[in-house]
Each structure stands twice: as C-alpha cells, then as structure tokens.
Image 1: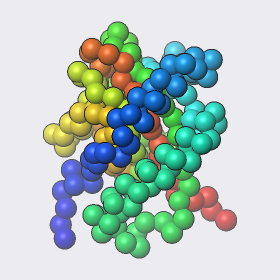
Image 2: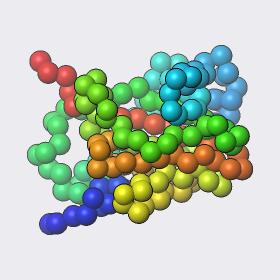
Image 3: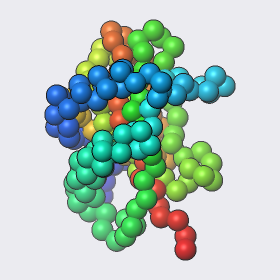
Image 4: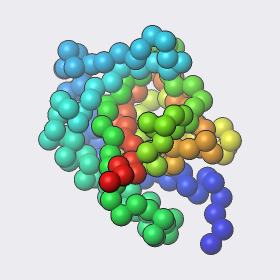
Length: 185
C-alpha cells in the first residue's frame, strides 16, 4: 500500500493518564538537583532529567506503555520484517521547556552523526497541555499539539524535519525516547 510521509507520524492519545502525567511533573519539580541544563553552545534549550538513571521504577513502567504504542505503530504501518527483531533504547528523558522564550528546539532531525545513526524511531510523550509548545513538521504540513498522555511516534531521519515550539503560557513537559538498532555482534 502506498503511503505518504506524514503517515509515518502517528499520534496516540491516552498513553498515560493525566494524573500520572501530573505526578511525573510534580516529581520532576521536586528534584532540581537531578536536572541537567542544555549546554550553552547548542541551538536548542531545555532542562532534562535522566529518568532511566534516577527513577528506574518509572523507566520500567513508561517503557511498557510506550512499547505498547510503538507496537500499535508497527502494526498500523505493516512494517513487518523491516523492523529489527531486537531493539535497544536510548535513555528515557523528562524535559521541561519554560515559557520565557528561551527554551525551544528549532527545526532539526534526530540523526546527524554516526553515534546517532543507531536511532530508528522517535517517541515523544507529552505530560501537559500548553498554549504553544507544538511539535511541528514543516515539510509535512503537520502539527502535534501537547496534551497530557498524548504520544507522537515518527522516524528520526532527514525526511522528518521537526521543531519544538516554545510554550507561551506555562512550562511544557515531555518524556522523550529513541529506539535504536541493536549493536552489531
């Protein structure tokens, strides 16, 4: 079946409950000593927390719910044998973008070097609703609006240029993960 590129950007609502999303936001805000700032030399800006390292029980739960949606993605697009039999995952990160106009992620792709070339799928799970803060795919004329528990899944490659617009009214919180091809060997 012929598909359009925008068909490979899929949105799933209800991945996490609004209550669970708010609990993660509250826990993030209660742990400023675990926050990592974006390096100053980068074109993007946000604060993040490595969930995989600091909150293994959250990592375990979120891994399961994200993988359920990714399985839905795999089935809906009839990927079949083109998908790796075994996948690796990059660390799960909780990111906060403040509404002060500084925090944003300009148009980019998620694979830009050899190390990142193991990435084959991007998953962003929004934890709250904001004015602004959309994920836009300019070449696909597609916009995903943040909402608690909404997850967007798409390939990280050059055909899927996207941007994280700055939120206007409150901080935006997301969980972000990449699926990797397994290491050789």
